Amino acid sequence: MKILCIGHASYDITIPYDGYPIENTKNRVDEKYECGGGPASNAAFLLGKWGLDTTFVGVVGDDLYGHRVVKELNSVGVNTKYVEYDHDDETTLSIIIANKRNGSRTVIAHRDRSMELEHKLNLKADIILVDGQELRASIEAIENNPRAITILDAGSLKESTIELSKRVRYLVCSKNFAEDYTEQKIDISNPDSVVKVYEKLKKDFKNEIIITLESKGCLYMQDNIIKLMPSIKVTPIDSTGAGDIFHGAFTYCISKGYDIEKTLKISNITAGLSVTKIGGRNSVFPLEEVMKIYEENI
Image (cartoon, rainbow, N blue to C red; front, side, top):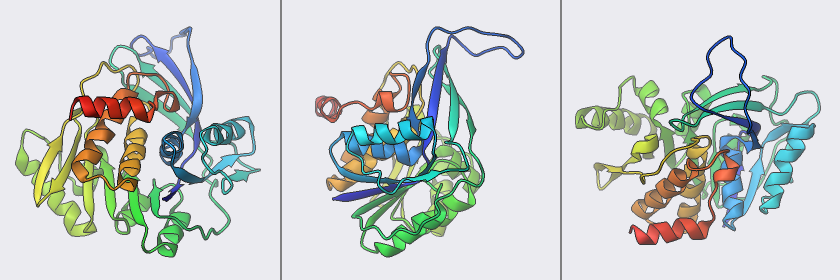
């Protein structure tokens, strides 16, 4: 199957730190990790590494970081023919502080506001994954491929993610997106709160909804029953890119025709393993290792 990933590409510089820096101090570290990043770009990297026919569409600067991002994607077989190089703006840069004590990450990102895909594309695909960064191109791809399975990585509440939520088959959103859109907090110990969130999302978007809960796993609906798929237990080091990796694994499983429970188990395992390594793309585990853990815990 041909998979098309459209959206954000960045270059990440991750700095592991023992705790979190105190304001107005100087701090020296011994480690730093660099790699490409961005939700759709990271998902494409995983899909390429796992052997699928994957094309990434996005925009980077015509600079050192942009060429590194494309080279990384090419290294795992991702088609980057339709990546645009912006000659006026620089590649999005993310500086990430990874708290080694609890695995949390703090991201400071810079992206030029004018950076956007310029050319129209007419690409054929069986599965389309979008992250809301390139709204026009995403809508064009969805409309040009009416039979394609469509997936949205809705990480945050923006006009673009709301618009795309109305157009996709699978809305795979973060807890933050779900809570901000519905104006209702999710408390998994309080089923009523979860039902209210799902009722609002289903009423407005009328698609299949998965809500990711980070270390707690994810919520999904099956046979009109809302269920929790727990994550695996790991010792977190760096959560950078875990959500992107979840979406990449989800897309892989959908392409293989797995049922929703198998899909979410594998996606949770993949994302859970990713937080045990530093750096988004550095933490994409081989498919064989993920499936081995899935079989052991089936």
